[in-house]
Length: 274
Image 1 (cartoon, rainbow, N blue to C red):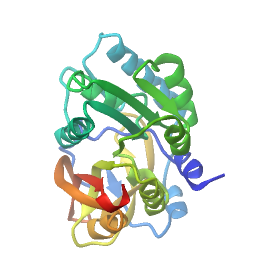
Image 2: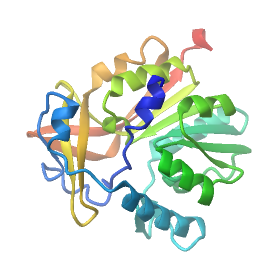
Image 3: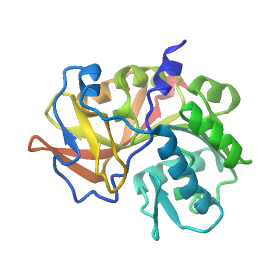
């Protein structure tokens, strides 16, 4: 089993942060764990099927036009855009003569796709591929896949079937056991653009592994979550990519009284490697 195949199995369903972003305190994140296994000891776990079914029901309403916007299974009456992500996608499309082929790593059943669908309606040729857990992929293929939206089990499978222009990792890399290893693997694919969105960074603090506890009003779950040192994180890209965008996302947190800011980072493959 290759590294990417192993890592994709570690992706957990995304959690809501936009709904409760006013809770910038340790209600969400606690601890400074020496290892992933140690963090798991303090996690209650989650029922993947129940979360999957909740996401499925909500996104079917979006797909059928019965609701406007979904994030992490919760329906909203107003779309909350990640404009840096959207601008990045539109830039890729403009540079590519109106063509946009997206690999959305850990993209649920299409949350980001449906979020940005209206703005991307002018793209001449749009393909949006999601790489997810096996159960999500099976549900995605049965209920959501169409001429634009596609689902794959691994990055390798997706890249073998798609001419990918950009890889998106939105609120996902922090939930991977070995995130820097995953970054190295993704960088090695040399896709023209990589967008890291809604990802938490310290300015002057080492990587810290916490346990994230989701408030019961969302669903009962807790699992390991990383906070990254920004400079160390950026080193994964410096040999192959240029950082062209580094802006704050709409979420921020406080861990042990240290501010952590979610960011959107956009990387472009260096000319010498194209």
